Amino acid sequence: MPIKVYFAAGAERWPAYREPLRAALSELGIAADLSDSAPDPAAVDYIVYAPGGPVTDFSPYTGCKAVLSLWAGVERIVSNPTLTQPLTRMVDQGLTEGMVEYVTGHVLRHHLCIDAHIHGQDGIWRQASLLPPLARERPVAMLGLGALGQACAAALAALNFPVLGWSRSPKSIPGIDCHSGDTGLAYVLSRAEIAVLLLPLTADTRDLMTAGRLALMPEGAAIINPGRGPLIDDAALLAALDAGQIGHATLDVFREEPLPPGHPFWAHPKVTVTPHIAAETRPTTAARVVAENIRRGEAGEPLLHRVDRELGY
Image 1 (cartoon, helix red, strand yellow):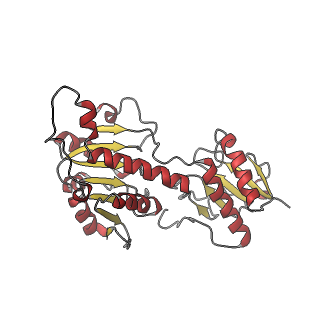
Image 2: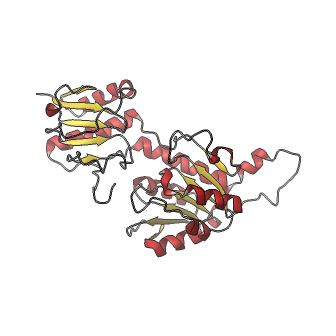
Image 3: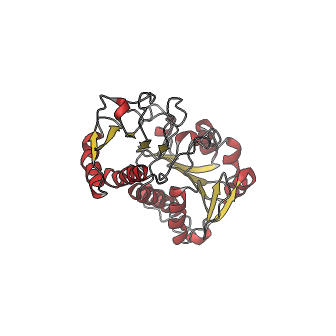
């Protein structure tokens, strides 16, 4: 009898995911009834989920073996009291590659003073003032050392940037100078000329970048945030930019999305806004992760990227 897979990730995503999911399930030999509707919730074996989809109450899905999120972040679902089923988050190769490309591109952009060259076409030869140091002389902080953070840190280290990593719990990663805890965060920030934020959003990381922590960074440092908008205190960041403490902020994620037209970030000369494009989930690669987790669920094997409810990710 085919297993019942309910695609509850939004009608707008269904056309893009339908065939990749069917193909991925078929490749693994899984006979599945895949649909974007669930007339009998109790008969559903797996839910493919994204915020904004049709499911907010998981209690009717009494036979559901796992909820498989298409998002890397799970802050909008992990505290749902009706969600008693195992929950997984999305970590897939396409998403990881996209994040590495975004982070590497913007780190190099700030490192090489590319903005100044683009906007300084005024006939003035600024060779001395715009000559960057070598990458090995430009420390970069990677705040968050999960799958995405580690991949980005490795790519930057391969370009000879000294990478200082920070995570809430201690980690040891070859080629990365790893730190943890409040003291470790202060140390990393005090040395980082560019900081990349790739932390999950939890009670411990919300407003992590306060005025005090921004003040720890070398004057004129750059911040790149493709992680979660609320990791940064917006007012503190704007004040630090105005004061020159922070030289530039490249922001891909925000407390409210889409970012409202009147938000100060849009018009600030030291802010680059990108519209949450750093690491979009790609149907072809994401479908393989979903299918593999369904295979694992049916075989009684541990699920990939299962969320720890206490940690929140």
